[in-house]
Image (cartoon, rainbow, N blue to C red; front, side, top):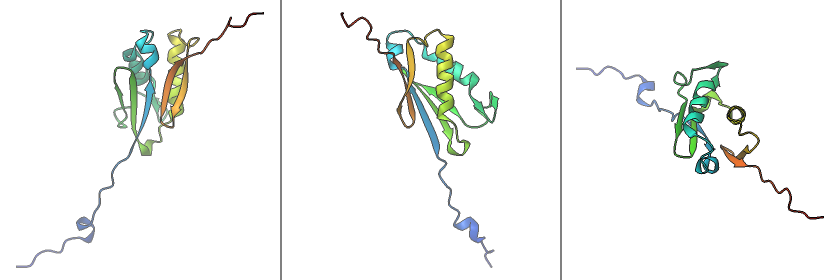
Length: 128
């Protein structure tokens, strides 16, 4: 009884780990002050994130948006080359729509995260 030859490729085939890129938007300060609703912000991002020039294709491209109490995380496969800049643009548009753009700004906290901060206003401190 002869054993059929096994193709070389199938024996030594190595599965490469699919890498994902995660971007975090930290909304801690406005959420604690009850200025911003993370649920509506998540829905806004879900409806408007574009992949390949088209909205509504998040599930087909394995892009996931998850939220904690104060943070939104966008996880994307690395081969999509998802843009962090697009998240900043959409965050600023959301703040403008909610009329919060005059009070909050989007700041890069690290290479893969943004943070929503209040503008520091020091008006009226000086006396003449």
